[in-house]
Amino acid sequence: MTMSNRTKIPSYLMFFEQLGEIGILLARTLRNFFRKPWERELFLQQLEEIGVRSLPVVSLTAAFGGLVFGLQTYIGFHRYIGQGSEAYGGPIISLGLTKELIPILVGLMVTGRVGSAMAAEIGTMRITEQVDALYTLGADPNRYLVVPRTMASIIMLPCLTLYGDIIGIACGYFYNALMGVNRTLYWRNTLLYLELWDIVSGLIKALIFGLVIAIIGCWQGLNAEGGAEGVGRATTRTVVIASISILILNFFLSRMLPANIG
Amino acid sequence: MIQIVDLHKSFGGKKVLDGLNLDIKKGETVVVIGQSGSGKSVLIKHLIGIIRPDKGEIFIDGTEICCLSEDDFFKLRKRFGMLFQGAALFDSLTVGQNVAFGLERYRDFSEEEKQKIVRESLARVGLRGVEDLMPHELSGGMKKRVGLARAIAYKPEIILYDEPSTGIDPIRADAINDLIIQMKKEMGVTSIVITHDMVSAYKIADRIAMLYEGKIIEEGTPEEIEKTENEIVQQFIHGQAKGPIKEW
Ligand SMILES: Nc1ncnc2c1ncn2[C@@H]1O[C@H](COP(=O)(O)OP(=O)(O)O)[C@@H](O)[C@H]1O
Ligand SMILES: [Mg+2]
Image 1: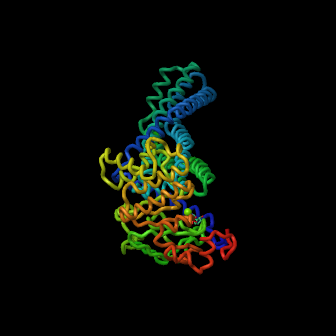
Image 2: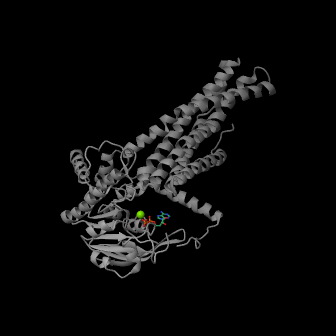
Image 3: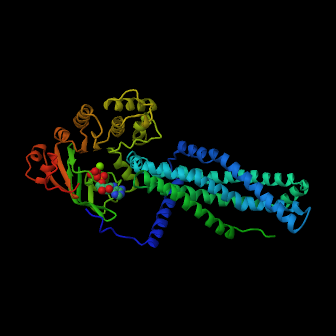
């Protein structure tokens, strides 16, 4: 028994092979969304794990995101247009937060918190034969493990993003108010120029990020091999691949989702 | 009842099964012996579709299992129970929930009946009052026995035991031998047992088959195996470091 005749697959082909694996997993998972029986209990657990337990970290990142955005916009207006114009920063801050910064921050934070945990948890189950045991005992691993996580993730990411929007906008306003900007004017401008669609398009992005995080985490977990080290690798890869995918997808989504430029 | 014909399986270019043939009759206990890493676990995982063959056929009651629909496969798996080499207990569930897992999915019982069966199954492997413990609170041997209770709880017709006595003290290991014999006598269970323990193999087996280099190189009743002239088998059953098997 030797390893010498092991077929080497060129790395550029491996990329497509993996893309194929992800595609198959995605298709199977989406199909199982609409099939009974649902693992209701596990779904609720995941809602809590992904949603409720991410609130502290989302609060913190959204708050400081809003503050720093408020700060730089204030400086920008102050420097280029002059004293008194800072109140026009309101819509810019809100637009930047709802469409870009908050969805990305939430996506990256949940990747680190939840995506990695999915890979570790499912990866451990995989290498200790628990995934095989599920199958043997009549539970489809896709329905039992992947579907609840994916469903919870695509529901919870928009919720977290909406919550982050509110915190971020409030903190951007808070900073400007603190710097003595005209509060009434700031709010009037914000409400006048911020459209519902700006918020909704951010939520659509978040939904897609949620799908990406769960599918990549589960895919890495289900394909983990080689003991504890393999689980570690799956976890790291999930964070790297999901983070990069989110940033790249974000750009293309920003291009594709219509924006009203008035 | 089970026929394995010319089974081939490789992992990443490494041949594990290389044209393996084996027949198992209804109600029979077949013990598979072979070195660690020779592919015994891979072999039995093929029978319930955890691993798909590269080539070859597996017939269960005359039906080739490769191309069954999802529903038919579900019905087929219901007939199998499997004890995994590492027990494979679900570590997020209690011992009781673990044992009830297959029961909930394969059979329709009231909560009360379910609890009763869980208790009975655990009692069969010599465990009492452990339902509410978590798997990480158990010793290795206890995990194995819970794994066994989980496999027999829904009364499968065919049970696959992957090293049932490894990691268990000799007295309990013999109790497991008795359990395997009892399952066969009481319920006519067909068993495939993987073991390194020749004492246990002689005690429980109707037939013993030896896996070597991806094939079954010898099979027969315990008496036939004991008297075999095949040097590889002799070396293995007598546990000698010197002999035709060099690789280790
Ligand atoms: N899922 C898998 N992926 C890659 N290699 C595997 C896999 N399962 C088993 N193998 C390899 O197949 C060989 C046989 O393994 P196994 O059947 O577990 O041996 P044993 O006879 O000790 O039960 C080993 O070399 C193992 O590394
Ligand atoms: Mg094994």
